[in-house]
Structures are given as structure tokens and as C-alpha cells.
Length: 251
Image (tube, rainbow, N blue to C red; front, top):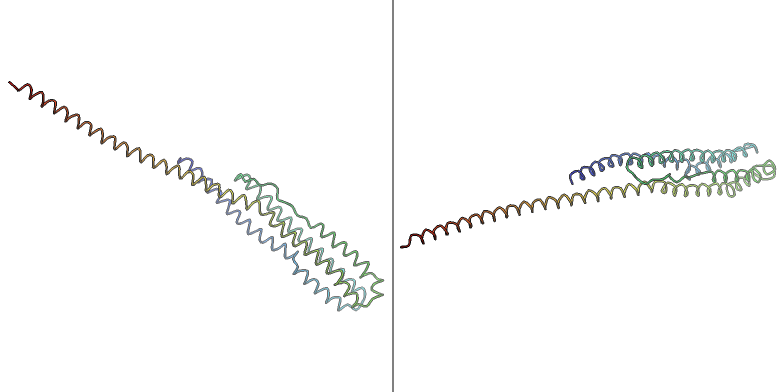
């Protein structure tokens, strides 16, 4: 029992050491998540829309107006590329920690679920092509007032870009929960398993101690009974001796 308790305690200490690494991973994971949403988040898109509107309002030539719209899409793509780099960094970290916890603690962790921003990049490309044809082409720039083009850009193009980023944000949030969930679940289950094993062995140890105490008590009772039997035997012997002496002394 002592050996079993010692073994579980060692496992528990090793697992607690692993937990410290897990908490460190959680900290890095939070930092990488913040980086991801700094690039993918809607705040950055609001700032981009504001700066693009200001640039278009200041534009005095058609070429400058078209350049402002092109810059808008370049920045949107840049945000997606930077977000994609953040996703890959998170994936690399999660793959490494899955492998480490599987080997060192026997957790049943497969390959983390993947995530790609490619569909959103393609949607931005599609919107850019549409804008170049229907809003920022030379024909459109010559045929419409700047105010009309600005209104069309923000009401028909920028709003669709924003919706694309909103979908990307929702999907990224779902992925981040899904990629961390298996590790969290396995760690909780392993903690519960170790705790139950330790408590079970403690109960066995306590039962063993109680049994040993009971055996010791019974041995004391047996010793007392043995002494009493010896005393009774001696009394019986003494009584027999007295009886024989009395009989032999009679005339």
C-alpha cells in the first residue's frame, strides 16, 4: 500500500509540474489570441474604413480616388495574412503541447483541429475585382461624381468586406474554443483520475491500519485470556493439592 501511495504521489507531482507548463501555454495562447484579433478584429477594419473615407474625401484626381480604394483592399488582405500567421503560430504551439502531454502523461490527444482563412481571402479578392469593375474603373470614375462613388464604395463594397471579417471573427472564436477544449478536458479528467486513485489508496491504507490495530487488540485479549487460563489452572492445581493433602491426613 505504501508503494502504491508513493507511486501515485510521484505521478501527481509530475502531473502538477506538467500543469505549470499548461498554465504557461494558456498564457501564451491568450497572448497569441489577442494578436490574432488585433489583426482580424473589427476595430482594425473600422479604423481602415475611417482612413479610407478621409483619403477619398481629400482626393482631387480620379487616380488618387482609385488608389485609396486599392489601398483599402491591400490593407484588408494584409490583416488576413497577419491573422493567418497568428493562426499557424497557435497551431504549431498546440501540436507541440499535445505531443508533450500525450507522451509524458498518457493523455489521449490527437492532432489539433485546423483553421484556414483562405475562404475569406478569396472573398476579399472577389470583392476587389467587383470594385475595380463597377466602382473604381476609369469608366466609372469619369461617369460619376466622387460623392456617388464614395457612397457606392462604402454601401456596396466596404459593408461586404466588413461582413466577411465578421464571419472570419466568429469562425476564429469557434476554432479557438475547439482547439483548446480537448486539452482542457483531458487535463481535468486526469486530475480527477489521480485524485480518485490517491483517495482509494488512502482508504485502503486506513483500512489496513484499522485491521492491524484490531489484530493487535485481539492479541492483547488473547494474552489476557491465556493468563487467566493459567491462573485458573494454577488455582485448580492448588485446590487439587489441598484436597489430596486433606484426604491423606484423615485417620
